[in-house]
Image (cartoon, rainbow, N blue to C red; front, side, top):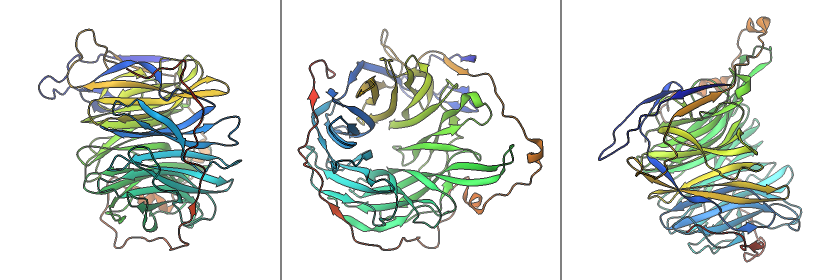
Length: 508
């Protein structure tokens, strides 16, 4: 391995932002806020039985919700649970089953967003293998369900998956998902709007314009000005690689929509260059723009496998700078990025393989720079699937799956206080210190010189990969009107998993 140390300038904001620049990965980072752990790592929800997987959360200054998958020896499948969070981002009450609770059926991949009145909307996917649908359910600010379980998609053939949800200040809810076989070629991305009371608003519609190959793994964020931004991974072929096979590409595309679900422009590429990406996450900024983090394959060094990249955009959807490689530990896999914006900065957390003594661990770093730091302190077995939220004031909450033993995992958490200016004497700032860039020795792929002489044969999809948003389209592409929504009556809302707090503590 090689290691490069970059001396971090010990200079922070005093009465205004004093910008510093640290060169890394071809870009510039500016002085970041101090980030101080508030207490230590703790079990967010107590010691819930079984395995906890795929958490997600949303919060503001009054609190919020956390959702996740739970499976026990008696559940006969994965269930989606939801629990309220207090204003200090500690857990409140007990978890409830939000999903159908059907035997021998898995209910998975939950996401949650806050409603303007403090309530929440939860999405997930469920169904028989090869025939899954996307579902939604709404809660009030006290964590009580105010609707039954509603199927979001009206096209009900094949697989509907990868759901995500966001809410505008006026209460307009946008649910997005991947649909297999609906847009004419593989997977496509679709959306459906709902009111804050859970009533379907209009019909489902196609989000992506290019339909060649697969468009999948959508993510959505609500922006200022009553707008949504949706991003997804778009597959294409760009000639042939050094082995003579089709040069498969996977770029991150995006499109902006108004509150009515009408696109305000064409789809365009978010990442730089023609690369292979996956696992993107969006976070809205205070200025109406957004920041996106994604996983990108390292095609120059096989030993580095994949990295986390970040890039920010203004309120017109235009990039404010080039994409930056965010992780400073480069060796092995870096995946599962999540981020949350607070003020003029954002905390990104991801799963890193090889740094943690137990295998996989959670790493974090501010978008504006500073040192990369370990989020989890308990390192036995795998720590994975991080989530980052804020209370909108001065606190971040990072939570993740903590594997306790082979048949048991919990949701662990760590809170941080963010402050402008340098941390006070004796107060720990996890962003301070040297920036250490650690990577593996270069291992290059063998080159097939004959294959390199083969002329590239790009598909037409490549013409949609633009550096900036083009002019608006002439008309809004509409999806076919299909059958009416199907309401599903799920399991009892009062169903609760067993919780033991004998050996667990909540933060002070």
